[in-house]
Length: 376
Image (spheres, rainbow, N blue to C red):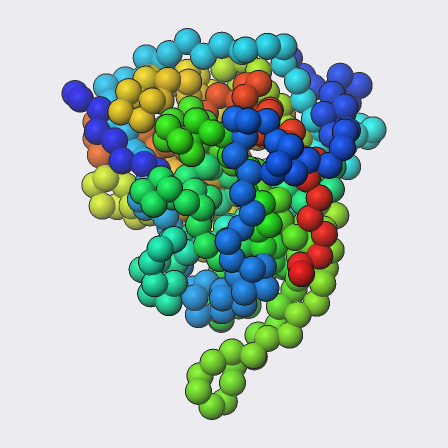
């Protein structure tokens, strides 16, 4: 069977505190001008206040999973040879730098994971067909202001530009009434997008990851206006993302065979048309990763994946290694990127991520040292 591919924004050794490379977060504040040449850093084109105000309760409710994404059909799973490009390294989760771990018998969903909302560039932003979302997570950084997601959840390869009106809502859940409980920890607007040059220029999905610096968050209270049907808002500054929800650790150059959790907000349909998820609440998968097959059409040669039936909307959600339910933290070792149908039955059965190596760390490090502060 020849692989058939479209992109998936739908569609996906024990660490100890003493062994962690905390030094990754030290150094001077990075800027777009000082970032490494293969790190693309661009400030968001939409002013932060405008982006947050754009996402009224009605628009959030109507946003759809980003289904311009990638899926692959293949016979079986015969993996490529993903190899580290250097020694492994790790940065601890927020709050775990000097503390021990606790145990929990149940899977507690991480507060760090949420949905990102954005509008497609060079289109009419008032057209609901251009209102989209992906998944993402807060991750450790020097200024506690960093969101990790898939590159295809921040950059439009068709128009060669970053998305507009990009905001992150951690611990998002879809209440029965407009805006009821959807943003318990506030809303965080993008300031700077950080991605690898090989994705932005070459559309290489071995680099389908991005790190977004966000401004301090705000909580919004919406009130429906009696005349005209519009919304009136009042806002309150709630401070830094990492102070409010924490941040996952980050690790790279690990084994390709790790037990991981993946979290996200799937909502799209399988190739056979079945739609098992609603996207209203966070879901998870658990399994052991393995190298995935090559997909030449998308320069995809170094992905790891595991059995998971996630669909569109889960894109950008984290692969978390060594996840502890008691602390709701682990180590980011991948992001939901591609959904796979490995047995040809028109059902997704694997989710994969780019293999995180030294190139990933380079992008992360540039972003992790970038300051944001309050919205202008």
